[in-house]
Amino acid sequence: MMKHKELALEKLRGMGNEVLDTVLKEEVPSIKIPSRGTGNIIYNQDKRYFELGDRTGTRSLGNVKQIKKMAQMMCVGNFCKDLVNIQKTATMREMYYVSEGWDVGFDNQQESNNITEDIEVTLGVSRENLGLLPEEDGASVYGDITLRDDDVEFNAKKLGKSGYTIPPTIDDVEFVDSNVDRIIAVETMGMYHRMVQEKAYDRFNTLIVGLKGQAARATRRFIRRASDELQVPVYICNDGDPWGFHIAMVIISGSAKLAHVNHDLATPDAKFLGVTASDIINYDLPTDDLKPVDVSRLKEIAADPRYKSDFWQTEIKKMLKIGKKAEQQSFSKYGLEYIVDTYFPNKISALEGESIE
Image (cartoon, rainbow, N blue to C red; front, side, top):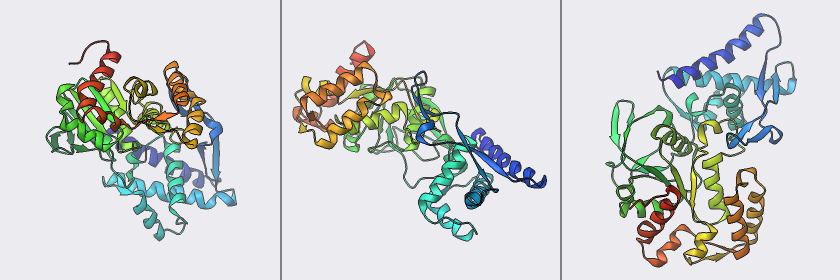
């Protein structure tokens, strides 16, 4: 069994034993749970991501209103312990239906999700390592990296044009070997396939990651692991609008909602390549007018501590000033190959201080 699974099992048993010991002492069982409320979510300037503060709450069988939730935590914990023991997984939806057989089943999926997050934050173990998975897989990956999943070894450059799909259980996958100098994550699968077709993986010796919009937890974990274990720079290219900025920033500094696991998901050294407001101007890109919702969102993120750098403040103000936004595919104005032939080499060379072609 892998170390992270052993840790999960140890934490689960510890939670159960703590409650049992209290019962045997004829005392009222209780569990301390770190608060996930907004007042306990802090942006750590040194670590450059959101994390939880020191506030905790107590869930106790001595409080009538908390009895059901306490029992649900024990049931979910026991379910996860069994999953880890037999080395199987279940989706969050499957667990919800399994709970129909419990005396303290959930009223709806959201209630189930909330209890799972309670256990995740209490134990300091991700739900994936507890055996609970989302319905969706992660991003697609293409490039010269060799991975091992169980006893199967493969290279993400030799799995067809769609590449390797990141599984929710990415922590179970071993990074065996790689021959890449950088990682480029792109928002849309259209751009991912364009880069594969133009052989960007060879031309820039890069690992290409197709985010499929907002990056799934497994995708963020993969990028973080690749950054740490491969020791190469990570670049992100999204649409030039506040929503593309946000997708990038969640990869870089994590989200407030997942403050309890950002230490494993955020990649603070990742850089936003574009599309920036400056790119829209410098490359004379086709644009759409900012909508009122775009303007409101830009003003919101301008006040977000994650965007306090001169780079982000300049680009946000510039986008508000020009009143325009652009999709990453808008470079096709100059030909399908332009973004790989010209844009990426220009931007990466500027960031790395030397030509990459």
